[in-house]
Image 1 (spheres, rainbow, N blue to C red):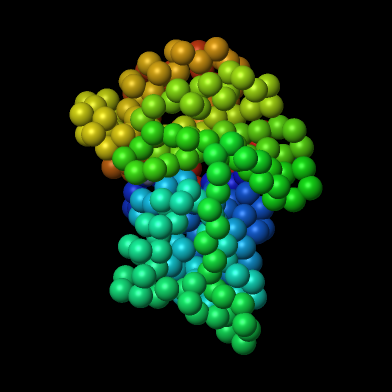
Image 2 (cartoon, helix red, strand yellow):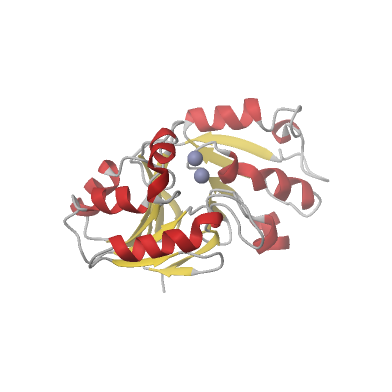
Length: 258
Ligand SMILES: [Zn+2]
Ligand SMILES: [Zn+2]
């Protein structure tokens, strides 16, 4: 069965809710908003973090899984993302001022570096294991950003991550038959449209207006990145705007089967 697990489904942290992170397999996660608490000691086994962009809610637990399980880690953690994303993590986060520069520290009892940075390219398929691939595509946010397509045994899920435009996401969905599920962000209620547009996020109203351009009506749609304070209000709005789309709102711990 093809599945990914949602480690963090929300647009900010709150009581018992985590920010963006997806568990692909025992070595690979997509974004690092919420790794430490759900994965615990399994955090030390993660070898690749695929970042969508540099915002704190997508990178924060890089700091804690390195620190909390420092002695348990046996392999280098490879942080993969767009060049600008990696530059921001190196210069503004793991920079020896905010948190240690783990790329200059070796693993406990080893010559291997704790962290290495590896740039990725748009639209290139990276093989994670036999039959499992990930590829990045360009999205539209306030900083350079990408969404990802994860393919297992010929069937795929597309994850927009934070974006305002859905043009690239819809183009991919409508040009590929392997994509069965869409995870799309929706951050603010429709009454906060200006804030959503300024911060390059979606509201339920904007999301479903944009989805009208998508020809594929059978795809399973999962919504993430809701700001928890607005969960009830936005759940009601999503039900109002969703029409005949198959829509579910994601929660931490939920699995997506595709
Ligand atoms: Zn963001
Ligand atoms: Zn975010």
